Length: 366
Image: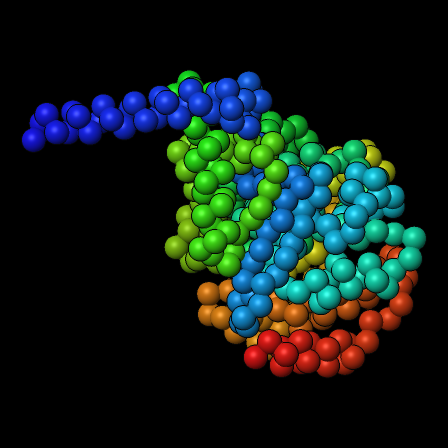
């Protein structure tokens, strides 16, 4: 038995060695092995120049999302970095919105009705306030004129080890991988396996991404860091009564410091900064308590309560509580009203007309 196991292990090692040897000279991954694996400062990122297919939560329909050369969700051919007068929407999965058809996605609706500005969706699912800020730092060189941050329950529970202080200073954590994982990143067979994974998933699953081979370094780096290094740092659970008073105060203070720093950084780039508050009553109260910690000039808007109270605007799938097509239309209308207050006028969105289009869209898929 022992000899058989040794023989099997030896055979596997020989096959791996031969495959690595072949790929080194005849494969397409040689350039990838020249780079060290380096995780991004934000835990979750979308690959540049990639397509993401996602099965609609409620109907048998595949949503196609495209991320441009800048790694930003984009419905147009023009790269985000080339766009002018950007109104940037930052936040988590409610902002990114991968489960809604393009025609009814809020940023696309707004772009069809506004002139002189480009609405850009910088959202990424799984984000928290610290990651949103890190993502802003990544794209602050873009021509952003207005920045709207959709603040959600749980955003006070930071997901990185970055620090934000009352004096306006901050430290962004620089994640690193061990020598063992760096060694794995030097093997051609590693990227062959990543390639195989993408191929198989495209065949077996409706939810899959297709991306350029050049993204494999960053994809692998982030996935390794997420699986083996990242611990759940979201310790702030302000809606739970059992939370310790000190932790509750620390959570509020951490969020307050970040929002002040966020605003200061945007103002330094001549960007107008606004917070959009998810309209859950408990969360709104929590946010307003945060702002009472110190004198501040943070501008915010509380979204319409119907985005929480009206079940028609949320996916029926019990495992997905995001806004559906109807919710996106209402959200777009809500944003349009906010834009109007700031002088960003656009054509009025006919909600009833859009609702009828959604009715037809759903009927055609059933």
